[in-house]
Length: 381
Image 1 (cartoon, one colour):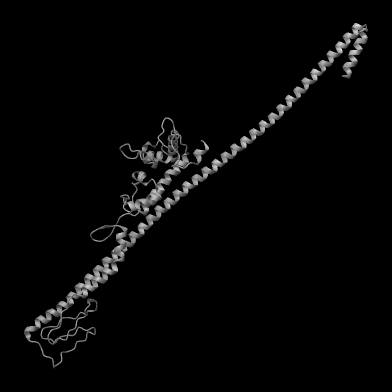
Image 2: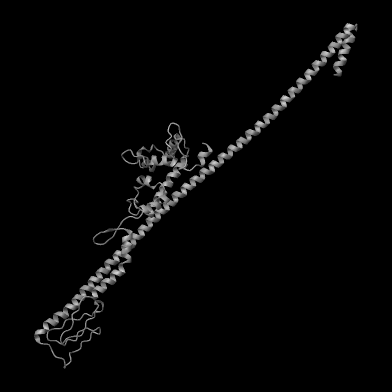
C-alpha cells in the first residue's frame, strides 16, 4: 500500500484501475455494496447485521475484509477495521439525523430541513433505503382514554399544557347557564356558580318559602308579605327543585371530566418519560458505537506505528551490516594487493640475483662462490 492511499479521505480517492476506471471513491463503492438489492431485500446489509444464514460463520471484521478486497480490485486500499469503522460511522450519522428530524419514520422530505440534514449526513439520500427500516426513536404512544386515539409526543404535550385553559373555559360556560329567578314574594337567592350553590330540600306545598343562602337558616316569611295564590304554588316548587338537580348534574359532570383529565395527564407523563428513556438509550448506543469506532482506529494506529518502527529498525540494522561487510571487504582487498606487490618485488629481486649469478659464472667464478653470492643477497633482501 503506498503512502498516498493511507492519508486520502474516503470520498477523495478515485478508482484508476485500467480494467475498470469507474471513477468512484471508496465511500461510493461501500454504499453500492450496502444498497445492493437482489429483489428480496438488501442481503449484504442483512448479512452484515447477522440476520442472514448465508453469513458463512464470519463476523463483521471478516465481512469487512471481503469489502476491503472489493475495494482493492478498484485500486483502492482500506483495512478491514477501517471499513467496519466507516459503516458504523454512516449508521451513527443516519441515526443522529433521524432522532433530530424524522419523528414519524416516513423519511425527511422538506427541502428546508434536507439542507441541514445533508450537512450532518452527506450520504442521507443514498443510505436511507438501507437504514430506514429502523423504528422511530420517538414512537407513537396510545392514550388510555375511551376512544384509544393514537397521538404523538407533540400532541400529548400540547394537551397537557392546554388542560388548564380548557378547564377555565368550561367553568366560564357553566357560569353562563341561566338561573331560575325568584318570583312573587319568594325570598330565594341562587349563586351564579354551581360550586358555591347550597342544596336545600324543596318546600312542600303550602309551606313558607326557604332561603338558600350559605347560612342555610330557615327564615319564615314576614307577615307583611303576601302569600301566593294556591294556583301558583306548584310552579314555584318545581322551579326550586330543578335548580339543585341541575347543579348536582353539572357538579358530577365536572368531577368526571376532571378525573378523565388527570388520567390523560398521567398517561402523557408516562408517555413522555418512556420517549425520553428510549431517546436516551438510542443516544447512549450511538455514543458507545462512536467510542468503539474511535478505539478501533486508535488501536490500528498504534499497531501501524509499531510496525513502522520495527521496519525502520530492521532497515538500520541491514545498513550497518552492509557497512561492516564493505569495510571488511575493502580491508581484505587491500591485503591481497599488498601481498601481490610484495610477491612481485621478490620475484624481481630473485630475477636480478639470478642474472648477476649467471654473469659471475660466465666470468669464471666457481660454483661455491656463485652460491654464496646468491645466499647472501637473498638474506639481505
